[in-house]
Length: 167
Image (cartoon, rainbow, N blue to C red; front, side, top):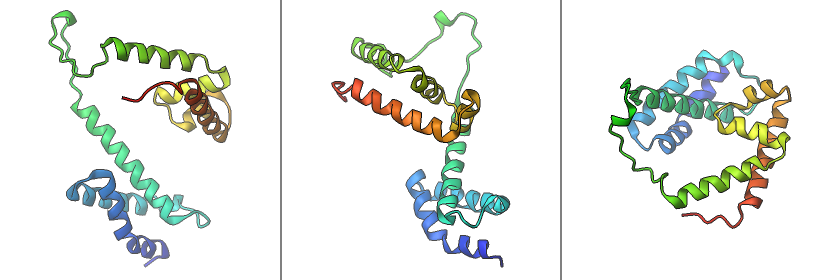
């Protein structure tokens, strides 16, 4: 048995604990544990010895969980091909149409738009769902710069929205 496989077997309890924290369901956690174990074994050539093994495995688990979640959401999304959207029955429980929420969204949008371009552009791409690597490629800057600028944008927004009350 390889050293990596031994480490992986030794981590099963830690992995199960983390899987339970992500899924809050024992069966789903066991499935996630199994998927992660297989994924780590299938991609063991991507692991380098100078990297924290436990951190790498937990990142693989987290990413596996996120990808599965997105897959489930996409499969449960119903698209109505109805040509007349006016007659389509829509339940609006979100509360996004209330005047207060509308005002808050406008304030947040205004604060984001007020960011300097070097912070605004990566932050907007991040909000649109782009991954750090995709943003770095799009803006032709190092990934560390992208992470730093997104962090700085968050700090600026916290300052700008300091009076913003949480509900």
